[in-house]
Amino acid sequence: MAKLHFFLLLLLAAAEAIHGEDGAYIGVNIGTAMSSVPAATQITTLLRSQNIRHIRLYDADPGMLSALANTGIRVIISVPNEQLLAIGNSNATAAKWVARNVAAHYPSVNITAIAVGSEVLSTLPNAAPLIMPAMRYLQNALVAAALDKYIKISTPHSSSIILDSFPPSQAFFNRSLDPVLVPMLKFLQSTGAPLMLNVYPYYDYMRSNGVIPLDYALFRPLPPNKEAVDANTLLHYTNVFDAVVDAAYFAMAYLNVTNVPVMVTETGWPHKGDASAEPDANNDNADTYNSNLIRHVMNVTGTPKHPGVAVPTFIYELYDEDTRPGTASEKYWGLFDMNGIPAYALHLTGSGVLLANDTTNQTYCVAREGADEKMLQAALDWACGPGKVDCSVLAQGKPCYDPDTVEDHATYAFNAYYHGMGMGSGTCYFSGVAVITTTDPSHGSCVYGGKNGSALLNGTSLAPSSNSTADSGSRRAVGDVTSFVRIVVTALLLSVVALL
Image (cartoon, rainbow, N blue to C red; front, side):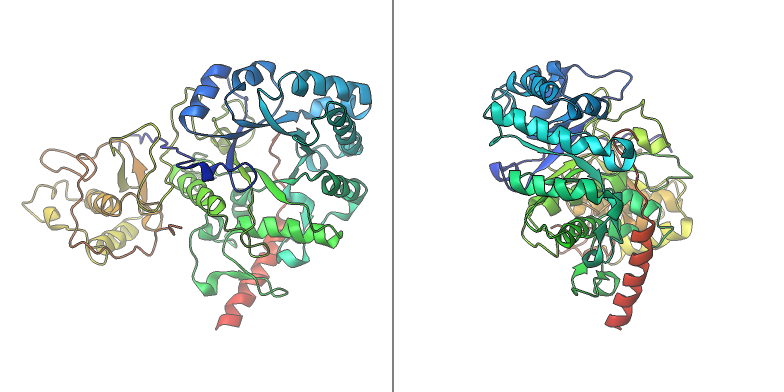
């Protein structure tokens, strides 16, 4: 099978509500660990074309800030870790930093927050004593410039600083960090700033050795007996994201802090990785996670502990970063490649793809190369049966009979179902044996749905697929999830027993 080429159809907003000023919104991180970094004007053009209204920068690059002027895009700028020593030791240095990187650009650049360092407590513990002085000095500078009412100061944390994170109700921060965390939380409380948290269900899933179900990590709907239940609160958790966010809320409550909101500054899913070591780093899972994440956040679903409370979230990340060290997947978290070419199709509604840069409907659902033949046959049988795909064209003598292989016949049936269901999120999944491509699989007189917008289906009432989703390093360190996994095992077992 030819190498598949995927593209992203990204539209983060169809109405003003999707990028509300203070409520629910989705933003995007912009990293620059690339062999060829796009020009700042190219980046802002891409952001505006995709209607991305919130971004986080890992520095305060003046060229980038100049390009963002008068765009209305809301920006979190950052103090890189390597600048903490200077700022944390000098009020004057902090004042100069604010004058140069904030006051010189605001309000033409809509700077909303300063992220002081990144995951310092988990990646640079020796620099931890500098965090609070740096935050206080920067706050003093904002006050002096009369900008403290408009710009908040916080610092992003790895979720690994939360111990015993499942069940969430018994989570607590690493007690060795109390000398920094206690005054930090009081600072956030007094200034109205959020706790910034990086949440990576992908890593929790990868390190769980099969304990955490993939569907639980991807926001896919779970039957009641598969949901994780917090035995202390009886709250039901249907995804890793909510469990980690609530663990942060409970950990803060353990320190008597109950009114600091959580902002997720990084989350996402890689669209490519080492085929043998990272098989779940693929386009379909990246599409599923990010599409479901966007829907979950923008619906103001909240979390089980705080239903209906917005959790502002930033997707990691806008571009693939080809010079990042580490495993293969480290380079492939982007929504776009360095040239601004979409990495994969991102589905944002149950009725199809929300379009930003494509209006031709040219996506297809095909059998995954190398998929187990028995699983393909089972999925083919389902599509041609309960899935109500008209598979008569696959009969001998019909246009799509040849090639007479399970893979080719499955591709036809998968694609017909996918288009018949409006290309909804998860309708090209089939228990993991199907993927989305932009390569037209049509051949000869066998024309596949999508080539001309057609799909061959029986009737008008489609049976829902049991495998479809609901409609409704230096910067990113991977924390230890051992305790999370260990406790999740117990909770899953208990929830199953309780529901038997």
